Amino acid sequence: MKKKPGFTLLELLLVMVIVGITAGIAIYSYPSFAERNIGKEAEVSLKLIYHAQKRHAFDNHGTYFSCAPHCTTELINSNLGIELRQANFTYSIAWRDPSAKAGFIAEATRKSKGSCANKKMILTDLGGQPEKRCAQW
Image (tube, rainbow, N blue to C red; front, side, top):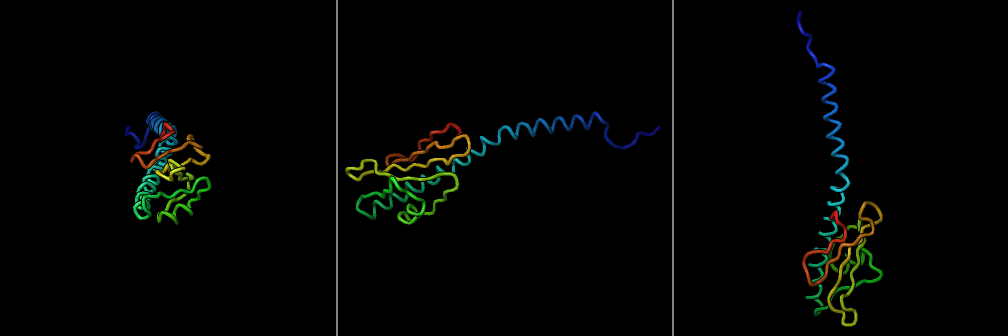
C-alpha cells in the first residue's frame, strides 16, 4: 500500500503551535520596540537643535535662541534654520540662565500616546547626550 503525499494532522498542528508562539512573542515585544524608535526621533532632533544653537550663538555674539514659553516647531525651524517634525514630540528651548540670557535647555516632550506619554528628553548646551526620562528610550 502506497502512502499518499501530504502532511499528517499532527504535523500541521505542530506548525500552527510554533507559528502561534512566535507571533505571541513578536506582538508582545513590538510596543517597546516602537517606543524605542520613537525615542530615537527625539534624540536626533535634540542633537540637531544643539548644533543649530551652537551655530546661532556663533553668529549672534554668544546669544542662544530661546522661544519659551510659547515655542512652536515653525518658530524653532525658522530661527535656527532646521527642519524638525512634530509627529510624536513637542519641542521647547529656554535659556539655562534667563537673567543673563546664557546657555540653553532644549526639551522634547512625548505627545500623549504610548507608554512614555508626556515624558521628556532634555539636552543642554553643556552636554552632548540627552537626558532620557523614560526607561524605554
